[in-house]
Length: 270
Ligand SMILES: NC(=O)c1ccc[n+]([C@@H]2O[C@H](COP(=O)([O-])OP(=O)(O)OC[C@H]3O[C@@H](n4cnc5c(N)ncnc54)[C@H](O)[C@@H]3O)[C@@H](O)[C@H]2O)c1
Image (cartoon, rainbow, N blue to C red; front, side):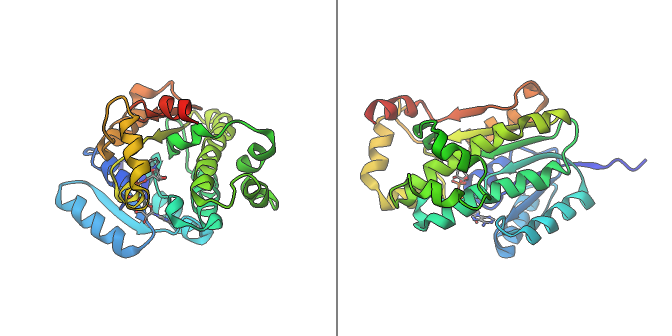
């Protein structure tokens, strides 16, 4: 009998949180994808050497043709158990359009493309950020964030971010949550789930870069965290693993905050 593989796809699979997520799936076939083939090849080799069942393909998530190649690769490999979307850039990218396109527009492209592969019990887990929770609900920009590909959306969001890429990051991560909420009914009709995870400060290459750029801010965040430490990628991966599992079968259309408790203290400071 030919049993089709039920695969876990991880975008940003070469990154800190992406790799940690991969390592929680010892018993399931993995597809690692990231921006460059070199990064993908290195990660696939490393995970294979550690005993994981893993293949990979490069994909620039802002490129529709690349996403098509990725979904075709997934279809050839098996059925879709989960899309774990961790690819992204922080405000360190400096360029407002780049942050908007990679973190928000590409997230919508992936949700739409992977919806075609989703079936009963498929789970999409998208990385948002605790910083998304610092952006209040507002009709003027929420409509734009929830429709990032519409002609005026980028300009509308730009009017609220003060030409600051870190602020744009906070806004687009709110947008990721709005996209998740917008798609929950559609995914639910297939018996599929869609959720976001909002990490606090997690010690990955992304956070280390932010530490170099804003050492005082990162020190302040650590002090403001009730647990008095940053998070580790494994602490996000364990939550993602749970969300993908059958134990989370009634969890959809929601955000899960994994921030060591810092958000409540940040809100008091704002
Ligand atoms: N580390 C943190 O403190 C933190 C906090 C909150 C949210 N997050 C979010 O978690 C996710 C993972 O972050 P991380 O810390 O693991 O970062 P990371 O930089 O270690 O990994 C991100 C990965 O995304 C890939 N990527 C970037 N642009 C891409 C593109 N256009 N196409 C394909 N891949 C691309 C990079 O190559 C990299 O491997 C991100 O969405 C980030 O915003 C991280």
